[in-house]
Figure 1 (tube, rainbow, N blue to C red):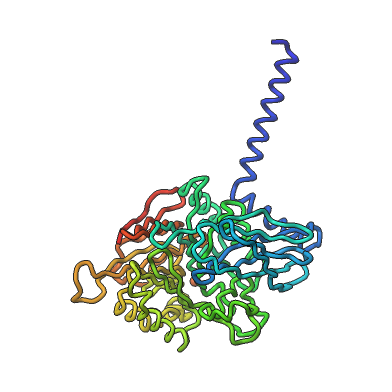
Figure 2 (spheres, rainbow, N blue to C red):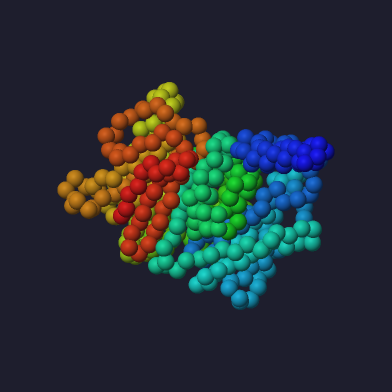
Length: 435
Ligand SMILES: [Fe+2]
């Protein structure tokens, strides 16, 4: 080979190597986090193009409806959400619009009923820009359902990205869970717009884009909450759960006055029934709702009965000073003292919580005299990215498994069984059980 050919080959090899290194660097969690921060800054300086800043995120809105939220950096004409089930008629919905500030233009829409459709498609159309078509695959009641359970990614976008990568590895490149159960604390500060972008939407978009086609069941955490009953509250992206059991309410604007602030609801996942509670806002209404739901035919006849509530009934790890001296040991007392006796009385199988930033799981008998198989399981899954809780503040002498690291849970529900598999960021199984 001549000298100039060798030099050319060397040059090409070096260039290819640099491309690989650059591509790898751009995919790292810290560089992606930095890129999001830069993009937010550019938007604030009015130096970013008019574009989607949040592509659609999909939420369950009772069993037959979906709630979608998206956002643009400018007003974008007259957008429409188009949806259709299987090959049937297409529907167009005019979304609700809320200008949060001059660079945050939020749109929300509720669509359905989708009834028994096995596939539902939707996209956002308008005169300036549109999204691609997204397809939601729906399971029948007795088909196996794959549920991804995460919580407390708050303030840990790099770690959250690593968890999302591990989730992608677990489900495979071309397969998604059917539902995401997010058990609260998606952001550090609900009123900070940047937190929503940096800590939730951008990591989801960069790593999995699951949020477009896998609906999320969202359980409000203490950090996601603005407890003011005012129209322009700071529940900026998660205010969809108003009036969820009231069909007439589906047509109302999300928050029109102080009367709409209801996050508690119930929803089915296959043959399991899930009651979502708002740990931050105990109220006579929520207590009444819980009792009614626990006693309902839908809950009692469900194959598996599940509660999702951000604050666990039984905590063991927290910041010791805040626990003892700032009154934080009392935050979840109503969950333990008022709700948990009802969970046990009405045959709840599984209570899923976050809040405590590590993993714990306890399976105990519902009552001292109950049979061997008459158990209730408490699981804490607060490890999707937030700073870990490593200091023990209580010893309840009840937990079968404890893991002080970041993690997620794959929950597989079928007619035959409920399988729970907790995995760490490396994809190693840290705990599993079957009901
Ligand atoms: Fe929390």
